[in-house]
Image 1: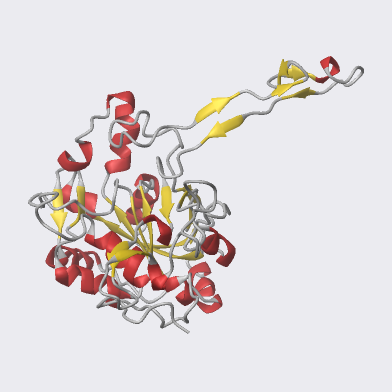
Image 2: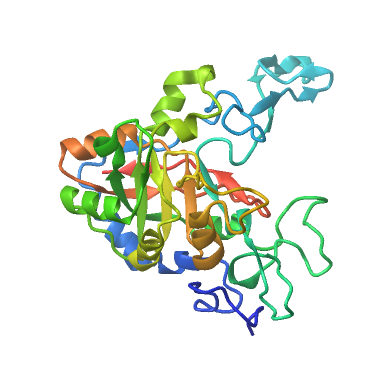
Length: 337
Protein backbone atom coordinates (compact mmCIF):
# COMPACT_ATOMS: atom_id res chain seq x y z
CA UNK A 1 0.00 0.00 0.00
CA UNK A 2 1.33 3.43 -0.95
CA UNK A 3 2.47 5.80 1.79
CA UNK A 4 0.62 8.65 0.08
CA UNK A 5 -2.82 9.58 -1.22
CA UNK A 6 -1.56 12.17 -3.67
CA UNK A 7 1.69 12.07 -5.56
CA UNK A 8 3.37 15.18 -6.98
CA UNK A 9 2.48 16.05 -10.57
CA UNK A 10 5.08 14.65 -12.95
CA UNK A 11 6.39 12.13 -10.42
CA UNK A 12 6.75 8.36 -10.74
CA UNK A 13 5.87 7.56 -7.12
CA UNK A 14 4.51 4.06 -6.83
CA UNK A 15 5.57 2.98 -10.31
CA UNK A 16 8.31 0.76 -8.85
CA UNK A 17 6.27 -0.32 -5.83
CA UNK A 18 5.06 1.30 -2.59
CA UNK A 19 8.31 0.71 -0.67
CA UNK A 20 10.73 1.54 -3.48
CA UNK A 21 13.85 3.54 -2.60
CA UNK A 22 15.85 2.88 -5.78
CA UNK A 23 13.94 5.06 -8.21
CA UNK A 24 15.36 5.01 -11.71
CA UNK A 25 18.09 2.62 -10.56
CA UNK A 26 15.42 -0.02 -11.17
CA UNK A 27 16.28 0.56 -14.83
CA UNK A 28 19.94 -0.23 -14.17
CA UNK A 29 19.41 -3.88 -15.02
CA UNK A 30 21.86 -6.71 -15.67
CA UNK A 31 21.24 -6.21 -19.38
CA UNK A 32 22.06 -2.50 -19.20
CA UNK A 33 25.26 -3.17 -17.27
CA UNK A 34 26.29 -5.73 -19.90
CA UNK A 35 25.58 -3.13 -22.58
CA UNK A 36 27.75 -0.68 -20.67
CA UNK A 37 30.60 -3.20 -20.45
CA UNK A 38 30.68 -3.42 -24.25
CA UNK A 39 32.02 0.15 -24.26
CA UNK A 40 35.34 -1.19 -22.96
CA UNK A 41 37.47 -1.39 -26.12
CA UNK A 42 41.05 -0.69 -24.97
CA UNK A 43 40.85 -1.08 -21.18
CA UNK A 44 42.12 2.42 -20.38
CA UNK A 45 40.87 3.77 -17.05
CA UNK A 46 40.20 7.34 -15.88
CA UNK A 47 39.67 8.61 -12.35
CA UNK A 48 36.47 10.67 -12.32
CA UNK A 49 36.77 12.13 -8.83
CA UNK A 50 38.56 15.12 -7.41
CA UNK A 51 40.83 14.63 -4.42
CA UNK A 52 38.52 14.80 -1.40
CA UNK A 53 40.38 17.90 -0.14
CA UNK A 54 39.28 19.82 -3.24
CA UNK A 55 37.81 22.44 -2.98
CA UNK A 56 40.74 23.42 -0.79
CA UNK A 57 38.56 25.69 1.37
CA UNK A 58 34.89 26.16 2.21
CA UNK A 59 34.67 29.35 0.12
CA UNK A 60 32.01 28.08 -2.29
CA UNK A 61 29.94 26.50 0.48
CA UNK A 62 30.63 27.69 4.05
CA UNK A 63 28.77 24.70 5.54
CA UNK A 64 31.13 22.13 4.02
CA UNK A 65 34.81 21.68 4.68
CA UNK A 66 37.75 19.60 3.44
CA UNK A 67 38.43 16.42 5.44
CA UNK A 68 40.00 16.87 8.86
CA UNK A 69 42.48 14.27 10.05
CA UNK A 70 42.96 13.27 13.66
CA UNK A 71 45.48 10.97 15.26
CA UNK A 72 44.52 7.75 17.00
CA UNK A 73 46.27 7.08 20.30
CA UNK A 74 47.45 3.57 21.04
CA UNK A 75 48.70 3.00 24.58
CA UNK A 76 49.89 6.58 24.88
CA UNK A 77 51.43 6.81 21.41
CA UNK A 78 49.98 8.49 18.33
CA UNK A 79 49.52 5.59 15.95
CA UNK A 80 51.32 7.10 12.98
CA UNK A 81 54.68 5.75 11.82
CA UNK A 82 54.69 3.96 15.15
CA UNK A 83 57.33 1.26 15.75
CA UNK A 84 55.16 -1.52 17.07
CA UNK A 85 57.72 -2.67 19.60
CA UNK A 86 56.67 0.36 21.68
CA UNK A 87 53.33 -1.33 22.32
CA UNK A 88 54.29 -4.93 21.59
CA UNK A 89 57.92 -5.67 22.54
CA UNK A 90 59.66 -7.69 19.87
CA UNK A 91 57.23 -6.70 17.11
CA UNK A 92 59.29 -5.36 14.17
CA UNK A 93 56.35 -3.79 12.35
CA UNK A 94 55.66 -0.07 11.94
CA UNK A 95 52.00 0.95 11.93
CA UNK A 96 49.90 3.97 11.00
CA UNK A 97 46.23 4.69 11.60
CA UNK A 98 43.97 7.75 11.54
CA UNK A 99 40.49 9.14 12.03
CA UNK A 100 38.87 11.45 9.48
CA UNK A 101 35.97 13.86 9.86
CA UNK A 102 34.34 13.89 6.45
CA UNK A 103 31.73 16.23 4.98
CA UNK A 104 30.00 13.79 2.67
CA UNK A 105 29.15 16.40 0.02
CA UNK A 106 32.20 18.67 0.02
CA UNK A 107 33.96 17.25 -3.04
CA UNK A 108 33.02 14.73 -5.76
CA UNK A 109 29.76 13.33 -4.47
CA UNK A 110 26.49 11.51 -4.89
CA UNK A 111 23.21 12.95 -3.64
CA UNK A 112 20.91 10.41 -2.00
CA UNK A 113 17.16 10.92 -2.31
CA UNK A 114 17.13 11.97 1.32
CA UNK A 115 19.30 14.97 0.46
CA UNK A 116 16.44 16.95 -1.06
CA UNK A 117 12.74 16.52 -0.40
CA UNK A 118 9.92 19.03 -0.54
CA UNK A 119 7.02 20.44 1.42
CA UNK A 120 4.06 18.54 -0.04
CA UNK A 121 0.61 17.38 1.05
CA UNK A 122 1.04 13.68 0.32
CA UNK A 123 -1.61 12.38 2.74
CA UNK A 124 -4.36 14.76 1.65
CA UNK A 125 -4.91 16.52 4.99
CA UNK A 126 -4.38 19.96 3.50
CA UNK A 127 -1.01 20.50 5.21
CA UNK A 128 2.30 20.60 3.37
CA UNK A 129 4.83 18.48 5.25
CA UNK A 130 8.49 17.51 4.68
CA UNK A 131 8.52 14.41 2.50
CA UNK A 132 11.02 12.56 0.31
CA UNK A 133 10.91 10.36 -2.77
CA UNK A 134 7.98 7.93 -3.06
CA UNK A 135 6.32 9.36 0.06
CA UNK A 136 9.08 8.31 2.44
CA UNK A 137 10.34 10.38 5.35
CA UNK A 138 13.93 10.57 6.56
CA UNK A 139 12.44 10.42 10.09
CA UNK A 140 10.86 7.39 11.76
CA UNK A 141 7.23 7.21 12.88
CA UNK A 142 8.17 8.96 16.13
CA UNK A 143 9.60 11.89 14.18
CA UNK A 144 13.18 11.01 15.13
CA UNK A 145 16.35 10.94 13.07
CA UNK A 146 18.53 7.86 13.09
CA UNK A 147 21.33 9.21 15.28
CA UNK A 148 20.24 12.14 17.37
CA UNK A 149 19.72 15.11 15.07
CA UNK A 150 20.82 13.46 11.80
CA UNK A 151 20.68 10.16 9.95
CA UNK A 152 18.01 9.09 7.46
CA UNK A 153 15.76 6.12 8.21
CA UNK A 154 14.70 6.15 4.56
CA UNK A 155 16.16 7.38 1.29
CA UNK A 156 19.76 7.06 2.48
CA UNK A 157 22.68 6.36 0.17
CA UNK A 158 22.91 2.72 1.30
CA UNK A 159 20.20 1.68 -1.17
CA UNK A 160 22.30 2.84 -4.10
CA UNK A 161 25.35 1.14 -2.61
CA UNK A 162 23.58 -2.20 -2.17
CA UNK A 163 22.19 -2.11 -5.70
CA UNK A 164 25.65 -1.61 -7.17
CA UNK A 165 26.42 1.13 -9.65
CA UNK A 166 27.99 0.13 -12.95
CA UNK A 167 26.40 1.71 -15.99
CA UNK A 168 27.06 3.32 -19.34
CA UNK A 169 28.27 6.88 -19.07
CA UNK A 170 27.34 9.35 -21.81
CA UNK A 171 29.53 12.44 -21.81
CA UNK A 172 28.25 15.81 -23.01
CA UNK A 173 31.11 18.28 -23.45
CA UNK A 174 29.66 21.70 -22.64
CA UNK A 175 33.13 23.15 -22.15
CA UNK A 176 33.88 22.63 -25.84
CA UNK A 177 30.88 24.81 -26.71
CA UNK A 178 30.92 27.45 -23.96
CA UNK A 179 34.46 27.46 -22.59
CA UNK A 180 34.69 28.72 -19.01
CA UNK A 181 32.08 31.46 -19.35
CA UNK A 182 28.94 31.32 -17.28
CA UNK A 183 25.98 30.09 -19.30
CA UNK A 184 22.59 28.67 -18.30
CA UNK A 185 22.02 25.70 -20.61
CA UNK A 186 18.39 25.26 -21.58
CA UNK A 187 16.56 22.67 -23.64
CA UNK A 188 17.33 24.22 -27.03
CA UNK A 189 21.02 24.57 -26.13
CA UNK A 190 21.25 20.94 -25.07
CA UNK A 191 19.39 19.62 -28.11
CA UNK A 192 21.65 21.60 -30.43
CA UNK A 193 24.76 20.22 -28.72
CA UNK A 194 23.52 16.63 -28.71
CA UNK A 195 22.78 16.88 -32.43
CA UNK A 196 26.02 18.61 -33.40
CA UNK A 197 28.14 16.18 -31.36
CA UNK A 198 26.19 13.10 -32.43
CA UNK A 199 25.31 12.13 -28.85
CA UNK A 200 22.42 9.75 -28.16
CA UNK A 201 21.02 9.07 -24.69
CA UNK A 202 19.10 5.87 -23.97
CA UNK A 203 17.20 4.40 -21.04
CA UNK A 204 19.61 3.12 -18.41
CA UNK A 205 22.38 5.59 -19.28
CA UNK A 206 24.12 8.01 -16.94
CA UNK A 207 24.34 11.56 -18.27
CA UNK A 208 27.78 13.05 -17.54
CA UNK A 209 28.11 16.81 -18.05
CA UNK A 210 31.59 18.33 -18.49
CA UNK A 211 31.78 22.10 -17.95
CA UNK A 212 35.36 22.66 -16.79
CA UNK A 213 34.33 23.82 -13.31
CA UNK A 214 36.24 21.07 -11.50
CA UNK A 215 39.33 21.96 -13.53
CA UNK A 216 39.14 25.47 -12.07
CA UNK A 217 38.81 24.11 -8.54
CA UNK A 218 42.04 22.17 -9.06
CA UNK A 219 43.98 25.02 -10.65
CA UNK A 220 42.85 27.77 -8.24
CA UNK A 221 43.56 25.87 -5.03
CA UNK A 222 42.98 28.07 -1.99
CA UNK A 223 42.28 31.07 -4.25
CA UNK A 224 38.76 29.82 -5.06
CA UNK A 225 36.18 32.55 -4.40
CA UNK A 226 32.64 32.19 -3.07
CA UNK A 227 31.09 33.43 -6.33
CA UNK A 228 32.91 30.98 -8.61
CA UNK A 229 29.79 28.81 -9.21
CA UNK A 230 27.92 31.86 -10.53
CA UNK A 231 30.67 33.54 -12.52
CA UNK A 232 32.32 30.65 -14.34
CA UNK A 233 31.30 27.68 -16.47
CA UNK A 234 27.94 26.42 -17.60
CA UNK A 235 25.15 24.74 -15.68
CA UNK A 236 21.64 23.61 -16.51
CA UNK A 237 18.74 26.07 -16.46
CA UNK A 238 16.43 24.32 -14.03
CA UNK A 239 13.66 26.79 -14.83
CA UNK A 240 13.35 25.59 -18.41
CA UNK A 241 10.29 23.31 -18.33
CA UNK A 242 11.24 21.62 -21.59
CA UNK A 243 14.64 20.71 -20.16
CA UNK A 244 12.97 19.18 -17.11
CA UNK A 245 10.67 17.16 -19.35
CA UNK A 246 13.62 15.97 -21.42
CA UNK A 247 15.43 14.73 -18.30
CA UNK A 248 12.33 12.71 -17.46
CA UNK A 249 11.83 11.39 -21.00
CA UNK A 250 15.51 10.57 -21.54
CA UNK A 251 15.41 7.51 -19.29
CA UNK A 252 18.69 8.33 -17.54
CA UNK A 253 19.23 6.53 -14.24
CA UNK A 254 21.56 9.23 -12.89
CA UNK A 255 22.77 12.68 -13.84
CA UNK A 256 26.31 13.76 -13.02
CA UNK A 257 28.19 16.98 -13.55
CA UNK A 258 31.56 18.49 -12.71
CA UNK A 259 30.07 21.73 -11.38
CA UNK A 260 28.78 22.54 -7.92
CA UNK A 261 25.07 21.78 -8.24
CA UNK A 262 24.24 20.63 -11.81
CA UNK A 263 22.00 23.70 -12.17
CA UNK A 264 22.03 27.43 -11.47
CA UNK A 265 19.82 28.94 -8.82
CA UNK A 266 17.33 31.25 -10.52
CA UNK A 267 18.76 34.80 -10.37
CA UNK A 268 15.35 36.45 -9.97
CA UNK A 269 14.09 34.24 -7.12
CA UNK A 270 13.60 36.30 -3.96
CA UNK A 271 13.74 34.26 -0.73
CA UNK A 272 10.69 34.97 1.41
CA UNK A 273 8.82 36.54 -1.51
CA UNK A 274 8.50 33.89 -4.22
CA UNK A 275 7.54 30.31 -3.33
CA UNK A 276 8.99 27.23 -4.98
CA UNK A 277 12.19 25.21 -5.17
CA UNK A 278 15.52 27.00 -5.40
CA UNK A 279 16.85 24.04 -7.41
CA UNK A 280 14.11 22.62 -9.67
CA UNK A 281 16.29 19.86 -11.15
CA UNK A 282 17.07 18.65 -7.64
CA UNK A 283 13.36 18.54 -6.87
CA UNK A 284 12.58 16.77 -10.14
CA UNK A 285 15.33 14.18 -9.82
CA UNK A 286 15.66 13.47 -6.11
CA UNK A 287 12.07 14.09 -4.99
CA UNK A 288 9.84 13.25 -7.95
CA UNK A 289 11.65 10.73 -10.14
CA UNK A 290 14.31 9.05 -8.03
CA UNK A 291 17.30 10.04 -10.18
CA UNK A 292 20.56 10.30 -8.25
CA UNK A 293 22.62 13.44 -8.87
CA UNK A 294 26.41 13.53 -8.92
CA UNK A 295 28.25 16.81 -8.45
CA UNK A 296 31.83 18.12 -8.72
CA UNK A 297 33.08 15.08 -10.60
CA UNK A 298 36.28 15.24 -12.65
CA UNK A 299 35.81 14.70 -16.39
CA UNK A 300 38.71 16.63 -17.92
CA UNK A 301 40.96 13.72 -18.86
CA UNK A 302 38.29 11.32 -20.08
CA UNK A 303 36.64 14.14 -22.06
CA UNK A 304 39.89 14.81 -23.94
CA UNK A 305 40.38 11.11 -24.68
CA UNK A 306 36.81 10.62 -25.85
CA UNK A 307 37.02 13.63 -28.15
CA UNK A 308 40.35 12.50 -29.61
CA UNK A 309 38.91 9.06 -30.29
CA UNK A 310 35.54 10.28 -31.58
CA UNK A 311 33.61 8.61 -28.78
CA UNK A 312 31.27 9.79 -26.06
CA UNK A 313 30.27 6.59 -24.25
CA UNK A 314 32.22 4.67 -21.62
CA UNK A 315 31.84 2.11 -18.85
CA UNK A 316 31.18 3.87 -15.56
CA UNK A 317 31.68 2.29 -12.14
CA UNK A 318 30.87 4.64 -9.27
CA UNK A 319 29.42 3.06 -6.12
CA UNK A 320 28.89 5.36 -3.14
CA UNK A 321 30.08 4.53 0.35
CA UNK A 322 27.87 1.89 1.96
CA UNK A 323 27.05 4.22 4.84
CA UNK A 324 23.51 3.62 6.16
CA UNK A 325 21.60 6.80 6.94
CA UNK A 326 23.84 9.13 4.93
CA UNK A 327 22.09 11.56 2.58
CA UNK A 328 25.20 11.92 0.45
CA UNK A 329 28.49 10.19 -0.20
CA UNK A 330 31.86 10.85 -1.75
CA UNK A 331 31.94 9.47 -5.29
CA UNK A 332 35.06 7.72 -6.55
CA UNK A 333 34.05 7.06 -10.12
CA UNK A 334 36.15 5.18 -12.65
CA UNK A 335 35.54 5.53 -16.37
CA UNK A 336 36.85 2.73 -18.60
CA UNK A 337 37.06 3.01 -22.39
